[in-house]
Structures are given as structure tokens and as C-alpha cells.
Amino acid sequence: MINEQQNLSDAGQKMHLLNLELEDLEKWVQSIGQPKFRGKQIYQWLYVERVTEFDAMTNLPQKLRDQLKETAVIYTMREVTRQVSTDGTIKWLWELYDGSTIETVLMRHDYGNSVCVSSQVGCRMGCTFCASTLGGLVRNLTGGEVVEQLLNVQRFLDEEEERVSSVVLMGSGEPMENYDEVMKFVDIINDQNGLKIGARHITISTSGLVPAIRRLADEKRQITMAISLHATRDDIRSALMPINRRWGIDELLETCRYYIRQTGRRISFEYALVGGQNDDLAHARELAGLLTNIDCHVNLIPVNYVPERNYTRTPKDQIRAFVNELNRLGVNATVRREKGHDIAAACGQLRAEQGRS
Ligand code: SAH
Image (tube, rainbow, N blue to C red; front, side, top):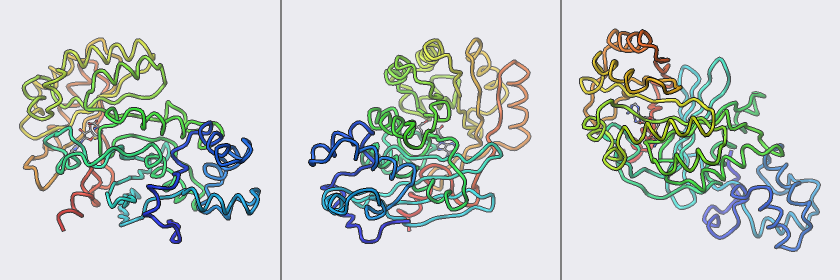
């Protein structure tokens, strides 16, 4: 999948074209002395034809292709490993030009192919159940590096004549902490001249950065907001998710109501069931109480095992009882169907495994 001739160490010096929205690409080609229309041609080669080499851009003069080879790169990541689950889920571990590693997951559902991308190398949110945060935050990804994850998966699917139908920002990192680059990614994959993935098919998951959620609400994009709630009481949530000490549950839910008012979109709440901590029926009732009058859907996620963490999973019938109780109280809730359980598909797991060995 990777262009072997490309000098990866150059990625920092050369222009990473996947970082440029169409308008910026047009400006950039003009800055290297080319007419503006070449920008759109290149853009279509990148996102519609999905070529990996400048020589494949056959409607560009050879001189321009040579100039592009000198000054720009398309792909900057190297595939380190790929794990394929029996249920068709595929997880990639990529090495970035600076040696950092990130993960991307392809999940196949009956409604289409969904891709989970990372937005940061590592994470500094410190959620106690999560593998991504074990080594802290290394750096933000650029928008182009997020785009590249998606394009790599789309190029893999091209071989099966399939396409990516939805995108979730639920890989490692806190997307709302890398706001501008994440929005650049959204704009690029939205573009009608390229991948044409609509905002309604994009979900951003956040641990609850209140000001950034408000900012996104004010932009009135049609993105689906997923909130990692995971607890019904501030003391429990603060113990699991340090960010709760900054913005507590009331303020977070008030912000969710604001998001719904501004965008007309329903919110998705993620609730990881952590054995013995937040998973009995009293919690289900409290959760239903908190979510009264919020147009939402609750995704229950049985906590994934992380070796560094000592959490136990909620027994199956208790999960059933939890979801039934929510439904009985009028809350729209489902248990997330687990994908890729055999291949360490929970966020940060593959990267953490690599670090351990
Ligand atoms: N930082 C963002 C997005 C990344 S995580 C956020 O916090 O929302 C995507 C989801 O997986 C989050 O809901 C996160 O809390 C959850 N998650 C992380 N580790 C998990 C684990 N071990 N088991 C179950 N869910 C987990």
C-alpha cells in the first residue's frame, strides 16, 4: 500500500498534499508557478482516482510531475502490522514519518463499512480504562495524517469495489483537543470533488471538552456528537475520567442540550460498563433520570480488557438487565456489537501491545 520509493524522512520537509483542502491546494500549485486548475486535477487524482504516485497523474505535464516529486508527498505512513478478525474487522498499525505509531480500524456492518480513525498519537485525557492514554500524549496528528488513514482503508476497499460509508473519530486521541486539524479532515472528506462523505456519516467522540463542543455546535455542522459519559455521578466519573473534574456531568449535559438545539441532531452517549463500578440497575435508573428530555441514543460498551488495568466485565445477563431497564424507562439504548474482539480492536490496544513487546 505504501510507495516504497518515497523517502519517509522527507515528509516533514515536503508538502504533505493530503493536508490541503481543495482551495489550499489551488493556492499551493499557484505558489509553485502553476495555473490554478492544476489544483483540482491533482485533488481528483488524490481522492477520486486515489493514486499513490505522481507519475500516475497522466493529465499533468511530465515537468510538473517531476516538480511535484521534488516538493511534495502524498502518502507518509508505513504499514507496520495488519490484523484481520474472523468477523472481517481489520486493524492497521501505521508508523508515521517521525516513528510514532497509530491505529485505524475497518468494521463491516450490514449497513456499510465504517472506519475508526485516530486523531492524536497517544492521549492525555487519562481515562483509567483506556489503553490509548497509557503513555500520555505524544503529539497531535495533522489533518492530512487523519485523511491518510481513511484513504488507506478506502484504497484497500477499492480492491473489493466497496466504499467507506461512515467514519468515527474513536481511535486514539481526544479529537476535540485537536479541533482545527480534525475539522480540516472533516472538510476534506466532505468535499464534493473528492470522497463525498457527508457530515451525517461522521461521528466525533469526545470525553467532554465543553468549550469545543459549544464551538462545534455554533458551526452548525451535521456531525454526530458522541459523548463518553460512562458514569451517572460526578465522583464515579471523576475517578474514571479526570476531565470530569474540570467539566462535571451537569455542565456537560447542558452543553449536549445546546448542541441539539443548535444542530437539530440527536446525541449519542457512550457508556462503558465497568464491572462493579457503574453497572448495576441503580445506575441504569440514574442514567435514565439524567437523560430525560435529551434526544439521544445510548451505546453500552462492555469494558474491553486492558492488561495494565484491572477491570472486570459485567456479566451478560446483567448487561441485558441494564439495557432493558433503560428501555423500560424510555431511553433509547443498545449494547454495542463487539467487533474484532479476537484482534485487540479496542482503542490503543495494538499500539500498547507493540510497546510491550
Ligand atoms: N477521546 C475520545 C475518543 C476516543 S475513545 C473519547 O473519549 O470519546 C472511543 C470510545 O472508547 C470512548 O467512549 C472511550 O471512553 C471508549 N473506551 C476506551 N477504552 C475502552 C475500554 N477499555 N473499554 C471500553 N470502551 C473503551
